[in-house]
Amino acid sequence: MATDPAVREELVATVRRFVEKDVVPVASDLEHADEYPESIVATMRDLGLFGVTIPEEYDGLGLDLLTYCGVIEELSAGWMTLSGVLNTHVMCANLLKQSGTDAQKKALLPRLASGEIRGALSLSEPDAGSDTSALRCKATRDGDEYVVNGTKTWVTNGQRAGLVALAARTDEGITCFMVEKDPGAETFGGISVSKNIGKLGYKGIETVEMAWDGHRIPATCVLGGEAGLGRGQHFILSALEVGRINIAARAVGVGRAAFEAAIRYAQQRQTFGKPIAQHQAIQTKLADMGTQLQAARLLTQHAAERKDRGERCDVEAGMAKLFASEAAFEIATEAMRIHGGVGYTTELPVERYYRDAPLMIIGEGTNEIQRLVIARGLLSRYAIDD
Picture 1 (cartoon, rainbow, N blue to C red):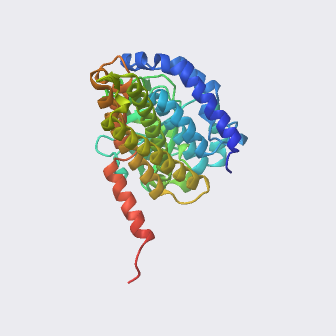
Picture 2 (picture 1 turned 60 degrees about the horizontal axis):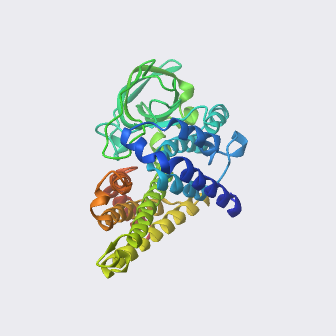
Picture 3 (picture 1 turned 90 degrees about the vertical axis):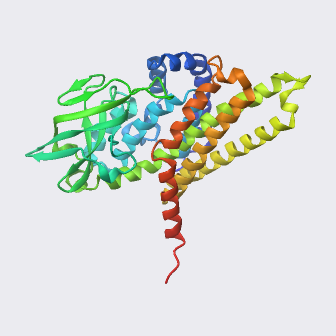
């Protein structure tokens, strides 16, 4: 069901005020220190953001994906890291919402909605990122339990998560498990969590390697119950549609922040006796940046609206992710060029936008993969009968 536009506008405005007041003043310091924003995340929980797309019957806000995209844009414009904390959690909740049994939903969704536990995805492996069919992590049945062995990487929220969506091979094929763990524990019954993986940008968030060494989980953890055995890849690929729309919304947020920084600076910085915004070369850049930003936002909203209506949106989500991420990187690059030397320093957040933007190009499936997804989808839709 679509969210009332007035409700959407009110929530997005609330998040914008929160970002301006509590995030923007401290984001650069936290990011450069690579420090997890505990107090900011606590406020996000108080605002109900961890339950934004979880139905009201499970104590969530029950809002649509279009509203969620607005929230993500605001968070990303302030500090892209915050959208990562939320997105992984929401994808975990969406897996439950779409494919969980009634018992799994009743037991876990209210706790996710309140932020009592936060979700993580343990999907990618050192040799299996976008190629989900190459997973090696194995779950072996042993009576009423499964024994899990394997290594996962790029696990966002991995240490602080209380619920982990795990993709592993069973005799039936790739299966998704919903595994509870002790939040904050570096080791937990055969699960060990490494220290943060160092990154170019996207700092202040835990991105870890997660090793599963003989960890035992009840058979009731299989997403969708016994009927879900071997269907994990289908469940996960469906959830990735939302993940790609989220990445597009993140890119719009980062692109917006970079564009607004550039257009403000261009009106303040003077050369040859006038603001650089009056130079035609700068005006051309600003025109292109503004156009790319608006196009990215509209593509993202279109994909979100299709998903909300229950329509297939693999092509639309891929297009939004592809275009918005490339646009964000180009806008961030142009923003740095407009700022000149000062844009290369750590005194302004422009260099942060420049370092954060590439994540959207490779996150939730690289853009090379997106082009294949889009092309195959288009060929299917426009197939010519022989």
